[in-house]
Amino acid sequence: MDEVLLRPMRVEDVPVAERLSAESFHELDVRHHRPGLPEPELRPPARAGTWIARTTHLLGTDPGGCWVAEVDGALVGFATSFVRELTWCLATYAVRPGLQGRGLGKRLLDAALEHGRGCLRGMLSASSDPRAVRRYRLAGFSLHPQMFLAGTVDRSAIPLVGLGDDKVRAGGPGDVDLLDSLDRRTRGAAHGPDHALMLASWRLLVSDTRTGSGYAYVAPDGTLALLAASDRRTATRLLWTVLADSTGEVLVPHLTAANEWALDVGMAARLELHQEGYLGLRGMKPPAPYVHHGALL
Ligand SMILES: CC(C)(COP(=O)(O)OP(=O)(O)OC[C@H]1O[C@@H](n2cnc3c(N)ncnc32)[C@H](O)[C@@H]1OP(=O)(O)O)[C@@H](O)C(=O)NCCC(=O)NCCS
Image 1 (cartoon, helix red, strand yellow):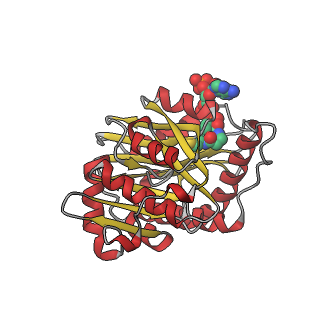
Image 2 (cartoon, rainbow, N blue to C red):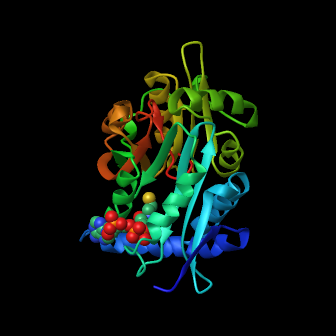
């Protein structure tokens, strides 16, 4: 391979990195495609916009955590990472299909990890790509299998919870201190500036009673984006509220074995349980009651 240049990511790289990311994850989906399931599709423009907004945000908060690899002036790989309090997080990471498996990924991950030196903890959500998983394990991450729930909720199973029951309400910017406290208690670090991005992108549900507190972000398509709670009872109430609001197919991704309360809700709602990828952790146990986000963790 011609000489590879590693350099910090710039704002003008973000749309190029987005396409590279879409292509490498599409190629991965095609490689792992199981017969009988729908053909994998390239990331649609609506989701490309979300990716670009998130990466631009991370480049703003953590310019030293976002790196690209270039060959002959063309972008061939990137890694974006960020530090929140004492936790380093990998947001996303890809090398152009056809150039993978030649050591580019190792150099990019090392550059991103350097941004987190001095952090006590690390978090990432790994794809099922054996190359990615090999890199993460060799970098010292414990790999916790991730499960997800999918399907249509059995409406007759929904308990009497929801926005109308006075224990769950719509949240907003005034709740950020509470959200940060719940983040610290569950995953050891506040999301801090990421809450502004999440509030702009998703619907926030908050439960704050005398016996427990928690919150959940829900994407416009009804997918659970992130959930943190002080106790399983509040987490369960929030997840039921998300499911009760869903219409048609629903997805609850990124569940670890430490969050069996969520599996129990899924079983009661007659959703299907599947497995995909890993939550990679350094210096910490799987957070609970907590459902992480794939990039903002
Ligand atoms: C994950 C990714 C960024 C890594 O980049 P890369 O350039 O392929 O990484 P490297 O070449 O440095 O490392 C890959 C390692 O896997 C090994 N490898 C290659 N093919 C493999 C395979 N089929 N099975 C297992 N290991 C494999 C390589 O030999 C190398 O290990 P080594 O350095 O110990 O020899 C890249 O493969 C990619 O874009 N994958 C698709 C998108 C993705 O999954 N991204 C991660 C999101 S969490």
